Length: 315
Image (cartoon, rainbow, N blue to C red; front, side, top):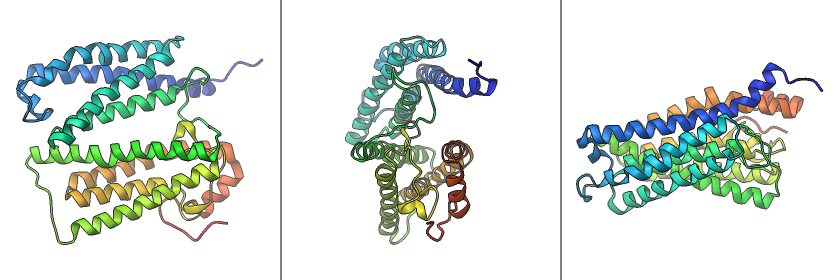
């Protein structure tokens, strides 16, 4: 039996490095946030509603130190050492982060404030969950892309669940956090006639494209759009006949529509930055995987259908 090459070892180790590195960053990032709160008490006002008593946020320090900071560091060590308990710890940390996240969102909904805190928490919770899916379960090896064959019904249900999480995170909580930060910095929102109906119409069109794309992937590909549960079949039906990644296109247009609706140039910039990040960092990884799995079929599809600009249907 031949020994794995250096390249194979690097590919195998990369997901472990990503997960462990993120958990360390999460631990020290949370610690730095608490240092800021204790060192500069006035900063607390940025993260809690005005109706809360002064310093009420500080009562959460012990839970964060024990469950998130210590928990993330312990999970990072176990992941790096490939301990048998790593899977359990990564998923526990992911679950733990969602409790304060939901509390923050509920507080923001109730008071209309503290969206900055909700945005920060939903980012941490979402990334923690992403790390858990990369690390996988007890029967899986860590992987940034993992093929998962399933029935169309299961794939559709999971796709719709992923859609709720992604849209809620990137198109609701994060934009509201950006707008709250924008107003605190004294940057005003813009307004113009027909702003709401025009931006709302654009959002509905983009959302329809996103749903059509996701459901097509589930039904025709027997998988989900999530990289760690990706479809085992090459999908070139539905919107994929016109553009190679309609879900990315839909998500970017949705973000622009949300920024337009809120009258926020920073939210529009956030959506455009998301497009750059996807194009530069995510797209090459996905395309390499598709080339390896589908070879000439994907190469022919890639040649005839453009990435961003819709083309004549591919057959």
